[in-house]
Image 1 (cartoon, rainbow, N blue to C red):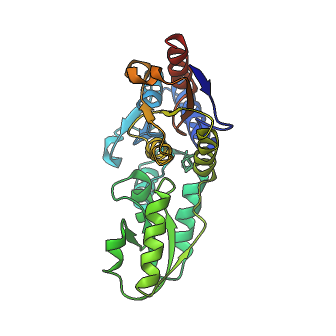
Image 2 (cartoon, rainbow, N blue to C red):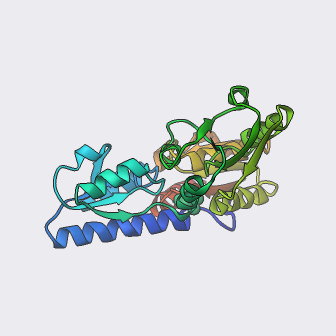
Amino acid sequence: MEIILPSVYGFCRGVRDAINKAEAAIFRAKAENLPCYIYGDIVHSSNVMESLKAKGIIKIERVEDAVSPGYVVIRAHGITDKDRFSLAEKGLVIVDATCPVVLRSQRLIRSSGKPFLIIGKAGHSEVVALLGSGKATLIESEEDLSQLPKGSYDAVVQTTFSLSSLSGILARSLELGIEVNLLNSVCNASIERRKAFLEIADSVEALAVAGERISKNTTELWECGKKTGKPCFLIPSPDEIPPEIYSFRSLGLTAGASCPDTLFNNIKRRLESNA
Ligand code: SF4
């Protein structure tokens, strides 16, 4: 089987920088004999988290879980202002690994003088962080718009939100007389990865995305591949390669922004060795 790779795939700058910051924090904490906590998952990848845990990081889900003085790394998707304040109040050294794209959206929410909308999925860590940056209403779907009073709103979009769902929400808002002023919350890394993946779709018989299901970035690439009409597979690990994939003579293979190079290379090698 011939494997074609897109011009860009895998780790984005935000993910790479976040992991580097976490590793540097672990190193500093060890040197000072202090614990190094991480608030949530640094990125949505169990492979990355297992690797950081093996190096000594301690995952916490709530501020009160940080029981000793030390370092705390803020995940790439950010946290609420309240939690950030509480961590600082506890005297922890904060290592901010929030992606600049998310930080920009948080700043926009804080500084807007207008009613604000956050377009995204409830419960996603980035959306939790955005909702915790100021007064805003969450819009998950077109249906949510019917609850809104008519008027003009500033808005940001979760970086991995589906573009087709966003188009639907914007079209419906026009019908309802709701003005949505989309502020710059675009994640170029996600857009570039989708575009590059689509560029190779015409030249292959099937498509595949390396990465884990917990990563929205990865599942969005998968959805994007399926929309081409070609068979498109999600491959979380080398052991989960579907056997039918070997019936195709060519495969366009990409990876989500949180898929480590080692995982991608192991999947690619396994595909090649069974070809
Ligand atoms: S995918 Fe986009 S938002 Fe997420 S870490 Fe990378 S650059 Fe930041």
